[in-house]
Image (tube, rainbow, N blue to C red; front, top):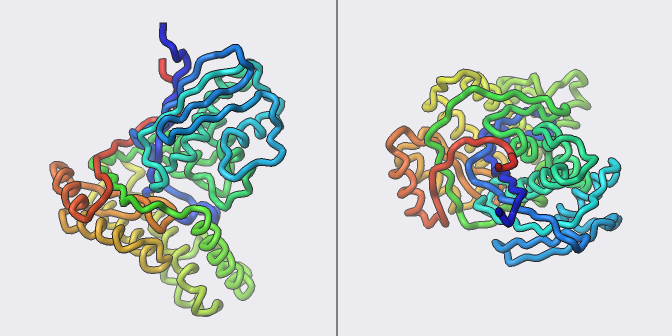
Length: 361
């Protein structure tokens, strides 16, 4: 008999296009990858959740009746239970849980959101009066539990991509407005810099500056609409804001335009990967040069990938560290991996697009 009768596999994710766009209500294109948060559970007779996290040598005991009125930052176990309690979905049975993962931690691939989605998936699967944990329910509820409960500056991309799986374009200004893209992207290489990313600080800072710049433009141009603005309008519109704010405004428009152009390439099955790689690197240049999100090691890894023949490459995650992703031509994956490793990358390996969070049977 299996000692862990409940098993859930929840993927990490890569943002392909649209970094720093979801908090502006603009679309993003992201994919789930075949790196997983594994949650295993079995009932116990103690009336508590006993949670072991061997990857970080962590252990947690959570009582079933804890209301978590004072929620600590980053407490996804508490925020998930508090969110469900508000919906009158209450656990009745204690469980032993083991959570382990091969998603790199603090590297821009959303290990924290994978934990949130996996935890909610488990709770909805184990509480008798809970609704079915569909991908859409997990997507929206994980966003609510992680971002809204914590009043965090992030958007919907992480939770939606992880719950829905595959390659998705997400309209972040609407609830459950998304489209699966038919694009077949092979040759994805993920490389970890080993430098921890900075999420909350970077997101809060850039979000505030971009929104301030947009507000300034709207005050002078009342019919301004960020989502319909094209790159050839930047020079005229940016005159409405101080020089110090212009890079954030320009980045918002350029990144949105690039995402729209990538969508056209990816909304067909036989995507031109060379053309897509050009768009990916163009996106990276905006993140590097206008938003200042890279560090020298990330720059060196990107340059190495491109010099080794990658179609394109970009930083992954909120910035200040984290990982990179590259699109490798068929047969060039190992050359690109070795080139990246030569720049002291912590790890580099191929990844594939995968399904969303699922119960294993």
